Image (cartoon, rainbow, N blue to C red; front, side, top):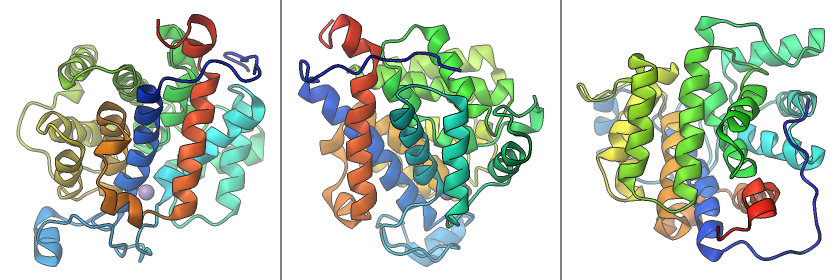
Length: 316
Ligand code: MN
Ligand code: MN
């Protein structure tokens, strides 16, 4: 099923430099956040303090024994989704499910339980959407959603929501998860167009009105689990508690728990908001070079598909 099928034209008016830098910032921010947080994934803040003081370097290690600068499933699934969209020239549920299945065949360093179950089910049944399941409000669909934010930039809100459901429901199908993931996509899109933190806060507040379980203004959330509610509470607290990429990312990964995923989600939003230049050079230098290259290429290729630029012009 195609949500939209862009006509790929020849060379056309370039994407404004600011937008390009923010899109790259979002994709590199996702990868850097994943790599930084993977070191402290499933640790408590206390264990992190004992081992690292404040964890602030892309040092690898962690429970997955990663190389320095290595990313995990959060970044790899985003790239798999982006590849499926670019190869199909649009959003096709089967192409997405196939791409996730091919990724799993490559024996990834890490894979979530719900993701694995969804891919196995697709292989067995050929169905590209799992049944509704309230237990599916896990992180797996949100952590990989960045390509949707890029390629649907400028599309009407309900079409963006439908695009998100297509990618999410290949493995995760819950209204609670859909609402949280769509908010992250909207935050990235809003940030890409150049706004300040206050505008992003309005989107988080709107999510809380729609679904009060996402309230994030109570006590500081530590050890966020794999449940998207906790993940977004930690991400929003760290994002709105800082005014730069580095401070926000260090805050969230030092909370431990599902730290590579809080890092990845915060990294894509903050990277879109503050842009590529705001990501510390030491982190970009340490990031796996092949991943860095894929993130850069996909950021611009997915953005070139976006209706925002194709139909209305980037400046409007
Ligand atoms: Mn991961
Ligand atoms: Mn994780």
